[in-house]
Image 1 (cartoon, chains in turn cyan, yellow):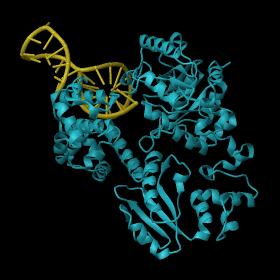
Image 2 (cartoon, protein in one colour; image 1 turned 30 degrees about the horizontal axis):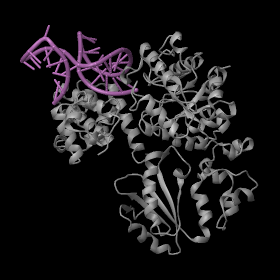
Image 3 (spheres, chains in turn purple, green; image 1 turned 90 degrees about the vertical axis):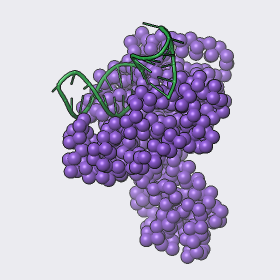
Image 4 (cartoon, helix red, strand yellow; image 1 turned 90 degrees about the horizontal axis):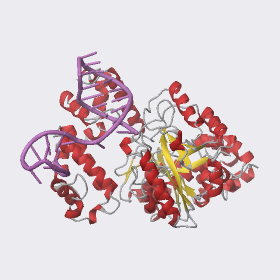
Length: 555
DNA sequence: GCCGTTTTCGGCCCGACTGTTTTCAGTCG
């Protein structure tokens, strides 16, 4: 069992203990231990009992739980309490604003154990009558359940990619030619349906062949001989598989990769309906249009973009020379500064920018001034090791509710660069969020605006911003805008990259890595960046270290 | 449940907000 699974199991146990109302200090201690384990850089499963109790908060009882998880794959404590908990309770815990205590109350007082019943209770004004609840809580819960229901059948790009790979491998064992199409082939940040093409002349036999794959569950009512529709076992994401005759392969592939709006713009059906084509390039050549890469085919702004640029100018992963928004064990990261830097160097990057949390982010062990100094001293020492690699001194400074950053100018001046990000008080309306973020951009020490809207895909909408004004301010103040490459965020939304390019604003593809593995998240960033037309020449971390430093100086 | 002692029982991560309350519990980042 991996570290994440162990920590997840313990965190689940904490929540369930709280729902059931066991001693709060018992659960708080387990939460504390889980945090310690989460930060442990090595493999937890290879630790001995004596080594485990070295971790703060871990004692005899918790060692037993951990060993159970490692050796048996489950824990009797967790299994026991799960047995006493209706499964729907776990869904209630996902609702923002409802913690375990409130969920426990809903369960005990109203007998509600799933989202549907809770929604009904909101509609009937029964939730607001509970002690500690009110109209506002009820309204929030109602809205959030609706949000969850809308998104319940969608997956983030990273998760959908894994599921798709699994299915593709199986399809390949059954068909000569298979291809991925739909939103995933266009690198969409959120996937609402997986689309595949399989080549076959046996239209009527293909459905049975697909059904012979373990896990494929057909929705017979929605399927036809030409299109299999259904799901993969254990997932709600809709899947469609089109059975295509060999001579129609390229034509069908083009149709299924592009967004319908792109097909409308190029009048695809008028020109190519039923026609055999050799490749996607032929489509654009025939129509005397510039070639559009698959991920851009949205019917959005790709043709405006292609009047000024060519696809060869788009950023690629191999163009990246470093990464600029990362965390270490100084704040809430899992790997040390040196480990993170060495991992970047091993990947062939030229620089590693550390941007740990600032002092306001106490929950993330944000750096007070003395620890900023200590970190920078360590950086100076480490930098003496290499002549081909540099650690840059950054910080992810919190944008306070009034728009100021949470260090004095004397401290801010010590950094090579500052990533300014909002972490608290996210629920602002546009009248408050705009002046807040604009003020942060105008701060002379701000270099990069971090995850601009604070969104968490499928979990939390970002706060509202007038992005044209934000981008204008970035340009005017020599600030780069972050494309946070964590698949949980992918914020800046790719739709605004087109505008950033028009205005000549540098976009920084930042992994927001909290451990070595997170650095590769830049791949997701590059995927959506290309979708939005990000040019190599305007990618901040495709600059070499000298040019980067010049940018930071706002010279 | 764990820790750390003023060594065997009392106290437990932080700061701020929100929506409840009428001084604070619950939640979040």
